Length: 300
Image 1 (spheres, rainbow, N blue to C red):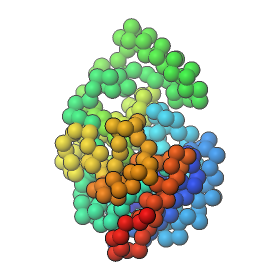
Image 2 (cartoon, rainbow, N blue to C red):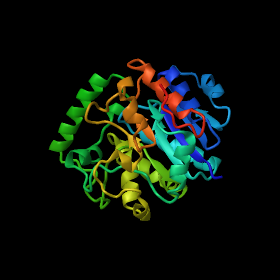
Image 3 (tube, rainbow, N blue to C red):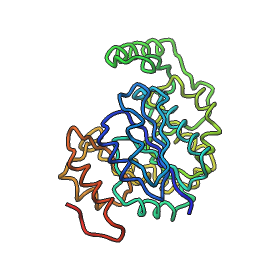
Image 4 (tube, rainbow, N blue to C red):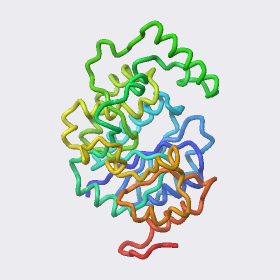
């Protein structure tokens, strides 16, 4: 049996992360967890959560929202996982996600689509305002912890660059794409991403929200484009097998009242959950996916 790799980027909510790891712990997965370097979470606290899966824990990078550090963390985990083994698929999720199918169901689904890449594209052509995220230089978010100051400095910087006609893409013929940053990709494409890590750093280091662009662009401009599970380019989260609700939130945080919706979803993972808002739904989903194999009864 060729195992699959779960890649997790986390930084808070320890009880929730414990449940996530235990829900995935199985013979089907090895787990690669990155905890933000400046997080209060202690890596050693999570070692007991996996008694079957091989659990690799790293606390190496400071991860900033919408900064290039998110790309660094994703590529770092891909590097570690591809060095460890040749996995069937590599699933990137966050510490705020949960599986909504059993480990066996998740494994079987992706194993039945061995050559497919599960990536969700927003649309066939990137919007001009999103192209600006890589057209201009975004310096302040990479380092500042004060988001309000960084926000104002960033806006000022972009306005100055517009007046000076700065354009990092002036001689760039790449077709850029955008979509959801959570993915499930094959071993071949994972290694392709790792092989291009230096060029990715050069292209996206001072960009904004590059985690929603770099992988989609790399795949779209490669032969792997022909292996997409869904090539509709319509922002469908089912293209990456994630249940995400953008209509009720940014994204919406699931509650206990959403339990039936979640367990009847055709997707494999769901986001987003927050133990400080509704811890009960996390417990319900955990009990559902950890039910004895072959049991179809809904868990209360």
